[in-house]
Image 1 (spheres, rainbow, N blue to C red):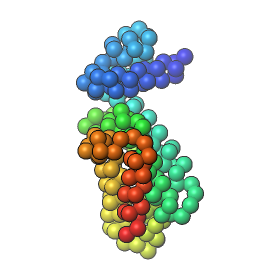
Image 2 (cartoon, rainbow, N blue to C red; image 1 turned 120 degrees about the vertical axis):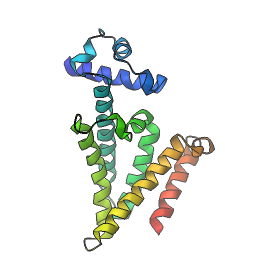
Image 3 (cartoon, helix red, strand yellow; image 1 turned 90 degrees about the horizontal axis):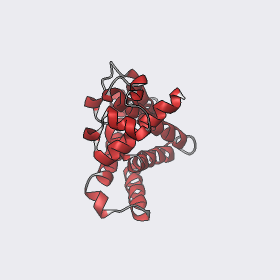
Image 4 (cartoon, helix red, strand yellow; image 1 turned 180 degrees about the vertical axis):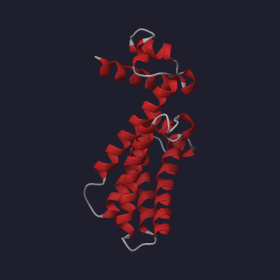
Length: 190
């Protein structure tokens, strides 16, 4: 029951943030939406920051699991493209998590190290693939730059599709998916 309570609180928090934004998150409203007493969330979370950190951890864990699944088969270039698509798809499917995950001011790594570790797990997928694409003799500085370049591409594309001008230009569906695939293919052709 206690693990169920934690999940209910987190699910209610996601719903509340989706509807009212982060500013609308309150322990009392989360409890009401979860159908528990106003004190029940405190059994797992000391405050709102702890809920947000748990959501960041959960988001990065979900993203890492999807990215790890996408990197399992194919050439390194095919897997890198597929992982990029997975990243963009995650952002579009899970906007609440995506918007929280990349706001470092929301999660103190010293207070919530599990959230940072989950982020590191997702980032490690990209590092592995870039390392494989560039080869063992590649300059470490160049590898770091390539990791940043690939991350910037997929993160920027996801942000433009989620909150930027591409959101209105390319609605959900085949057109948007085709555009994402085209961008990733062009980028990896270099």
